[in-house]
Amino acid sequence: MENNNFEMSLVAELLNHPSIITNIDLDSEWFTNKYFQLVVEAINKLKGLNYTIEQIHREMRTIDLFSAGTINELEMLRNNADNLGIEREYARQIHNSYLDNKLKQASQEYAATLSQTSAEKLSRLLEEKRNINCLKQDGRLDQAFMDFCEQLEKPNEALQSFQPVDDLLGGGITGGKLIVLAGRPATGKTAFALNIMEQLFKKNKNVACDFFTFEMRQNELMTRLVSKDTRINSLLFIGKNNLSFENKLKARQSYERMKQEYDLRIYTSEYSNLNDIKYAIKKRVDKQHYVAFIDYAGLITVHDNRKNERQVMNEVTRELKKLTTDYGITIFLLAQVNRSVESRIDKRPLMSDLKESGSLEQDANCVMLLSAEDNSEKIRCEIAKNREGMTGVAPFIFKKHYMDFSIDFNEWKK
Image 1 (cartoon, rainbow, N blue to C red):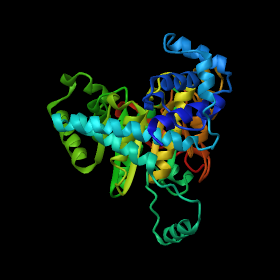
Image 2 (image 1 turned 180 degrees about the vertical axis):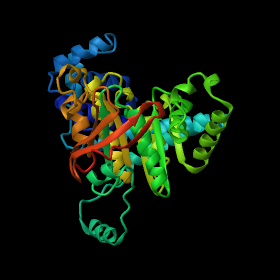
Image 3 (image 1 turned 30 degrees about the horizontal axis):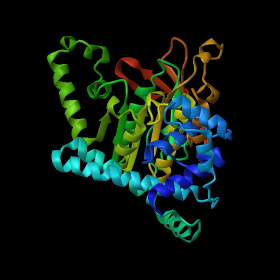
């Protein structure tokens, strides 16, 4: 069957059952036929519910009045449905054809320019094509049993960070987990994530970390690590003339040491799109122990700008969770809590305070909530959800001037 026939068959099925679009990955851009593109875009905008043919046609006219045609034309197209129940396969074939055309263009562009940008574009398209054509498991347990037995004989590979956190997590940070780290403003979410990352580097071997920061530049983030490492007040770095010769030397040496010893990459706002984040992570997942930190969930964008905030968050958490499962890695996803927590007497956040909390709470293996005691350096890291371990509180002291978190031993194990 030629690609145009796949397109016609799929669109005919969608006209009969618009809700199909909620069960398959489908983008109107994949279609070569402009009229079919318009139909798919209209059904997508209608959220895939069971709208009538008249309502679909009305939406098409809203998008492009002169290309919408007539209701009779839509009725004729709808009658071409074969009702085979293979809409997902039709979508895969259409997606494949679209990617083949894009790959041809990208290959020609790379051959002409040999630029890094065109090389990365080509690599992304190849990865996308591999993903849609990968052979899925048949559900049998034979290989799973062999993997299970192999894991029983392996030594514990949990990564060590802060002991109170490790204890609650069941011995440390293990792969295959999406960990949401959330808190009110000024509780030090970014600093806490950096402190966990530093602990991972110091206490474990063969660790690779990526830090995605969408509000800072690379050196702004590194300055926080340098401040913690050297015990130089972080405020002195704002005006470099405030630093003495000795402190400047200490700062350079600290930065150079971390650059040499840590397998660390820092990605800034140019990587805020979800596809770019996934692409960067997939390039690093072959490392023995890999952990990604993403700061923060609300700043991640997706390809489809028609989605509302909740739909975007659903896609973000779903795709990041899939990455952790597929590659056995750990991702820390930083998130904010709603402002409503500020109006309560008890300002400790709850999971229900998470912005767009549905998917954040649902998809996460673990949810950590940070809260500060008023006028105090004391910070509570509450493990509010933990699929594989315990819930409870890990107490910390936050020295803000040094971006330093340390265990509050006076409170721990009381």
